[in-house]
Amino acid sequence: GNSVTQMEGPVTLSEEAFLTINCTYTATGYPSLFWYVQYPGEGLQLLLKATKADDKGSNKGFEATYRKETTSFHLEKGSVQVSDSAVYFCALRGDSNYQLIWGAGTKLIIKP
Amino acid sequence: DGGITQSPKYLFRKEGQNVTLSCEQNLNHDAMYWYRQDPGQGLRLIYYSQIVNDFQKGDIAEGYSVSREKKESFPLTVTSAQKNPTAFYLCASSISRTGNQPQHFGDGTRLSIL
Image (cartoon, rainbow over all chains, first blue to last red; front, top):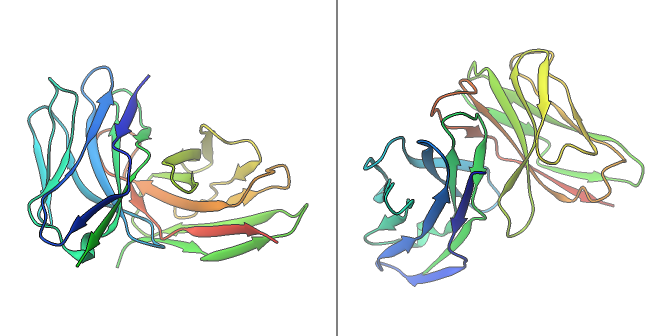
C-alpha cells in the first residue's frame, strides 16, 4: 500500500540556516504530494503541494519538488526564522483513493 | 471568513462517559474527516464522510461514532468503549473526495481523561 516516510526529528537549526526535511513515499500510479505545517496547539495548515512529476510547490519561502525517479518530496528553505518552528507533515493522496496518507511529522526548532 | 470550527478546545471525560466533539464548516465542502493525533505520531483517520447522511470507517473507528445530518456539521462521539481516548482530535474538510484538493483543518480538540 501507499506510505510516507519522513526524517525523524527534532531538527534544530540556528536562524538563517538552510533547511531540508526529507520525505520519501511509496505509491502506485501518480499520487499528489503535500506538505502541511502545525504550529503549537493548532490544527494543520497546507504549506504547499505538487500534483505531478517535476512540479515544484512553493509558499512562504519553502519549496519542494516532486521527484518521481527518487520517489521524494523534500522540503527546503534557504533561510529559516524562529517563527518557522513547528511540526511539518508530508502527505500523499493516491490517484485512485480519497485518503491522505501521512508521515509521522518532523518537529523543527529554530534558535535565535 | 470561511473555515472549520472545532469545539470545545479542551474536553475532559470521566470513566464510562460518552463525549461529543463538534465540527462545523462553512466552506460548502462535501467531504469531512476526523483524525486522531498522538504525541510524536502522524494523523490516523477515524471516520470520513463524502456526502450528507453517509459516512465510512477509517483506520481506527472502534470506540467512536459519527453522524452527518447536515452538510456543514460532522460531530464525533468518543464512546466509553474507547479505552485510550486521550489525544488531540482534528476535523478536516475538502471540496470532494477525489482529485488533488487539499484538506482544510480546524484547530483541534484536546481530550483528556479525568
